[in-house]
Amino acid sequence: MTKCDLLIKHAELITCTDNGQVCGLISNGAVAVSDNKIIWTGSSASCKNFDALSTVDAQGQVVTPALIDCHTHLIFGGNRANEFAMRLAGANYEDIARAGGGILSTVKATREASIETLVEAALPRAEHLMSQGVRTVEIKSGYGLDLDNELKMLKAAKLLAEHTGLKVSTTLLAAHALPPEYKDNRAGYIDLICKEIIPQAAKLKLADAVDAFCEGIGFTVDETRQVFEAAARWGLPVKLHADQLSNLSGAGLVAEFGGLSADHIEYTDEASIKKMAQADTVATLLPYAFYALQETQKPPIDLFRKHGIDMAIATDCNPGTAPTTNLLQCLHMACTQFGLTVEEAILGVTKHAAKALNLDEARGQIAKGFDAQLLLWPIKDVADMVYWQGNKLPQVITD
Ligand code: DI6
Ligand code: FE
Image 1 (cartoon, helix red, strand yellow):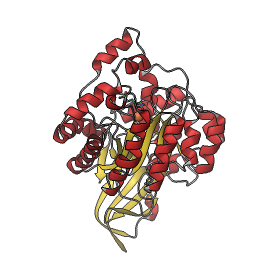
Image 2 (cartoon, rainbow, N blue to C red; image 1 turned 90 degrees about the vertical axis):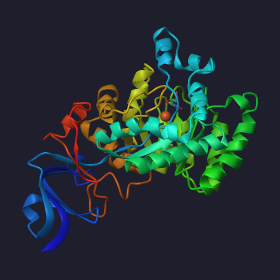
Image 3 (tube, helix red, strand yellow; image 1 turned 30 degrees about the vertical axis):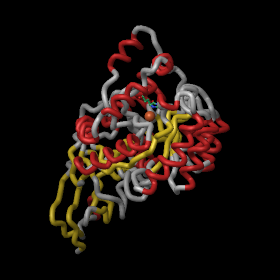
Image 4 (cartoon, rainbow, N blue to C red; image 1 turned 120 degrees about the vertical axis):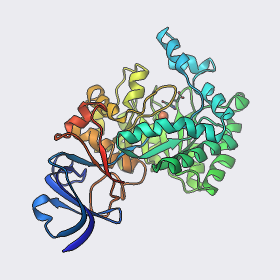
């Protein structure tokens, strides 16, 4: 007999591994856990050798790994509901940004907020994600835009992790927008990012990765390249808000730096996708932002498939273009708007989301050696997870 802490039996086990079945399914499956790690998976018929301290009978219901939201701006000050009204009256996202609203209005509110206020405001957002089974979340800075306030945001993200028990992966997004004090000195701000903000964030171990907004209303390819070169000097991996509103070949650029993920990517072309394939860069799809901006250009899903690119799905939770923490709805939208299959959607918030965060050896799959964070869903068919948009919530079996 092998001892274990917990044995789950009779599960529709969605392992998200490459076992040849859809979503790595083991029907009537079992999983054994010890010391918060998965030590075995197999069929319920073959688990008789375990002597478990406790047992859960899943009664044929779906068991999955905990979910991962791999692209969020969960920490921010203020609110931008007024812009929603402006957009309804005909203004678009770029008009609002150029008129000093948009990201910069959140920057003002975030700079004015204390770290405690930022954490308190983010708490219900984090809790809502957790209610959907999320246990790993990426959080970006990008509304501070100076040394102290960017670091304040990253520290707030770490505090949020302590308060909630979530694993938080932090991303420095100082190159999100040009701060007002550098309005006429773009090069000066890029210098500040490369020579002060990245080095400090790295030295203080506050950032797991570096991101930028490479766009007409954000930063140019050349500026983004400088930011990525600085990240590389400090040993930080990169990812990018790429080709969201236009094609600047941002996805190709981030792949040139061996980037973890290219995100948004509605306008990405095949030349960039070939570079992503070479670098094994994940395509992170953000269907809620696509919907909220009433974008019509869809990401080139068939080309991602053709080149074997792994696709992740995330909320992009932010006060401007994605006021949502409903990750399960984003799964549904990735299918209905972008044409993903149920399997692609599920892998997009488990295995592939873990890969986008460089956590794919510990999270996002039910397999030997992985963290034992397991969810029991009140459903028997995994398609219901995608179909019900957050209406059927999981129970956390083990954290
Ligand atoms: N793209 C986005 O969708 C968010 N940031 C970005 O670069 C929007 C951020 C905001 O509007 O506050
Ligand atoms: Fe974003």
